[in-house]
Image 1 (cartoon, rainbow, N blue to C red):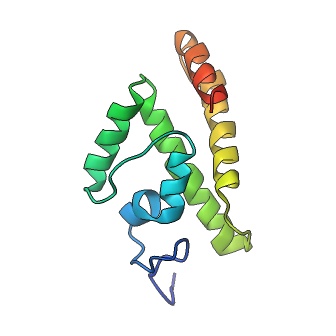
Image 2: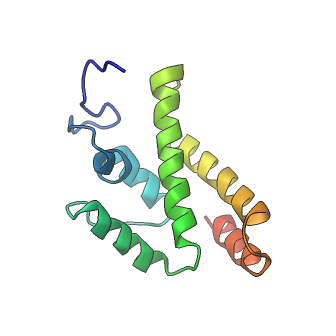
Length: 123
């Protein structure tokens, strides 16, 4: 796919759009993470940031949270790029909550379901 630019259009920083920037360092991404109560120092490596998020969450389903938030950011970005749908944090959180509830109800172990649903309902 030919891209006219590799500059992030999601934030005002005009940084090169790397995966670390898109999911963790972009102002839009940081606001999405904050909306679910997660903060981190964005000057560290991506691995360090994900470890910080894991320690901050301290829940057995931390990986589901990380994967679904990055997925929600990605799909919102794609909606903007391919469908001309303006990205909003509200859209990211709506997608995140919907997908998280589906995982909790249909993929999680029975003993984990209520904890997951309680966590997402508290957002």
